[in-house]
Each structure stands twice: as structure tokens, then as C-alpha cells.
Length: 216
Image (cartoon, rainbow, N blue to C red; front, side, top):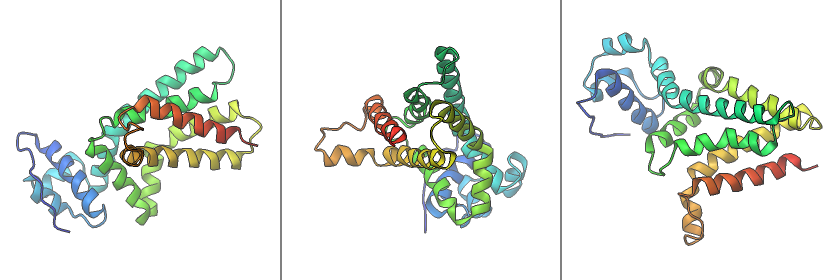
């Protein structure tokens, strides 16, 4: 696939490389994109990749890190806030998902945040490379998943571990799908549903998912 994009030459080399890698990975996939393509489009050389990142894989890690790290810090902070408020009791189910979902949706507002959409698309396409996908999950998402699952287990001790994992899997899938398709609900509802109403959408999503977690 031939891709064309104007790169902001005012950015420093590191940022130009990252921005170029983002849209090339999104357009072509991580595996199909070569370092030579990235450097040519970014107006840099291969040595600059080695200097700033060390490898193409580390470029991918940095792309994810610069978006996910601040997001996860907000999630952990909210979880801790709700744990303190619970005063020794399990965190309420709705609060667990508020901490998990709300920072995510707020981070991709407004809807035109294409960089975040591209990054999610890149991660989804890593199914073609299971080993790399697992490494990405372990580095950027595993700690959060374990923390959320532990909180859910404390709040819903009656759920078997396998059931808890399945329902958490469904909740993550719904979170990602709801974000990436929210313009569609605006169109199909003839604007009765406002995709830019992030807090309203999150509140409805939490209500829906919590009902599923509490189902017998």
C-alpha cells in the first residue's frame, strides 16, 4: 500500500520518527513496515533509529508507552482513590469500571484523535505476531489487568476465577468496540445518541457491564 503524509519538519528527529512509524504501522502493519521506509519518510537515517530507540520493536514500545503510561497512571490513581473511599471494604463494582473506562475514553476525546485510533489498530493487528503481542501486553497492560482482576475478585468473591476472566475479557472488548464505533451509534440513532457525550456513554457502558458481572 502506497502511503503519503506530510511530516512536520519542525519536529525533532525522534518525534518525526515516532509519528512516521505510527501512521506507517497503522497503514501497513508492523511486520510489513521496514526501518528504511520509516527513515525515508521521516527524513532521517537508520543510524538515528538505533540512536533513539535501538530497534523497530522499541519504536513500537515507545509509541505505546507515550500514550498508555499517562493513561494507566490515571487509572491507578482513581482505583487508589476509590479504595481509600471504600474504607476497608471492597471497591464498588461501578467504581472499578469507572477507574478503568473513564480515563481511556477521556484520552481519546475528541473523536478526531486519529493517533489513538491508529495505535489501537496497530495493537489489534499484532495478532499476526503472537510472541510480539504477548510481549507488548506484558510490558504495557499486564500490571493493570492483574490489579483490576484482583479488585473484581474482592468485590465479587462468588465468581469462579475462569468466569471472572471471561467477563473481564468481554468488558475490555466492549470498551474498545464502543470507542471505535461510537460515531456509528450517532448516525444510526439519527443523532439521538451523541458520540461526543463521553461521560454519558461511559455511564451507560458501566451500567451494562456491571449487570453482566452480577448475572447468575
